[in-house]
Length: 436
View 1 (cartoon, rainbow, N blue to C red):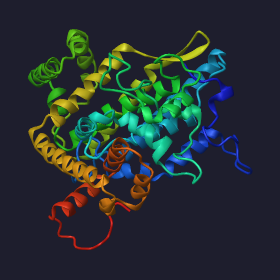
View 2: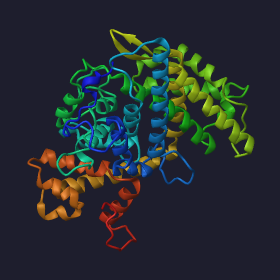
View 3: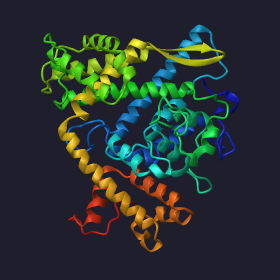
């Protein structure tokens, strides 16, 4: 479903739909606010899967977000053409600018070093409602980012806010997804505003487009990155010898068995068939050496996959509303492409060892800041803006959430520099503030 045209352009704080002399649509203004936000720029130094400074030209969270925005916009534009061809003109149509804006915003809450730190922060914040990257993204655009001195956040339109919400429920409200939620209770007022005409736990159509664009981009471009880096043996998975494919599939379902994904394991025949289908599209490959032919073949392959998954989606009209539908077999293909990264990269012992150190740094920083937040005499270790925020807090819970905001909003370079300073391991004796 999507939001009625009569309310989708409303903002929570600004009441004028258009400023004098500004000929942009409300959703275009949303997109531009996000493009120029420091929260988006920060993603250039935030991990996609491995560290952003690993030497290889991996995707980081910024390049990922820009590509999700491109795919999301193309999906939205495609469906507008389809609607026109079918003579369907729904009252709650799709706005490509709102979809693009939501795609730019969807990963703003992603903490440094990837999902391992998201889980660590969730544990550290267990007594104040946990930590979740999607809920943090919503908190950033509604509370933490800057646009005007008269109100918090970016004050995005109702349609864009709703399109950002991948999980339209608070923690504990959806037993089927206990570890995923879309907002903290501190942002309930903003959530209610964005969802005032939505029902239940159904995403808006534009949120579904954002999510499918995210899945497409994540699965395809990470595959490209790690094949180029020599971490993902596409040349073996696409070969005539099926031993590597069998070993990969066994590891996939053993992983899901170990984490209790019974529904995934029960669908093994369909998922294996989906991987067999997509692996037939792998170009004839050898171990990657960067030849012109390999580069060309890889680019054509990733383009083929993106086109395949964009074209595998459709919109239908149901009860007067637009709804995204995706070919189930293609959804299974994307799910299995994601498993390539899990098996060959995320579960690699070298990365697991590195993550121990990353979790240690985050736990140490979190305890240091939480302890300091309880004594005003110690607030000097906080950036000026966070000292100002601490002045407005009235409880230990609020101060702890402020510390989570600070740490989750750091880049990976900032985490390393601050940790080394706090522990006395830094060779940098300047007084430059890496968090200014």
